[in-house]
Image (cartoon, rainbow, N blue to C red):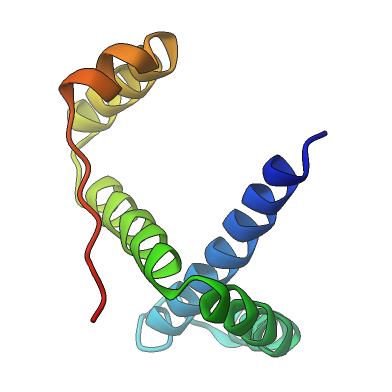
Length: 118
């Protein structure tokens, strides 16, 4: 396996872990945040926070702009999925399948924007 692929998977894992920590915090004031779930989430967060924080800092300090843009893109897609209807989710899934079948067409015809950090 190429080192670049391993680094990309590592970066994805660390960023998704950061998002998990943030999403767990969003549960604190919900009715679903009961004692047993509260204990499990607090325990998981405690275990993850130190590791993720340290690894995130390393990745962020290596390339702050790319890290910020990737994290923003992940947060955007999660928000879009969370706020989509069932019909929209089915269509989004189909679009993702089409993208995976023909990435070249999407790369040629679609635009992605990265925020330039000052």
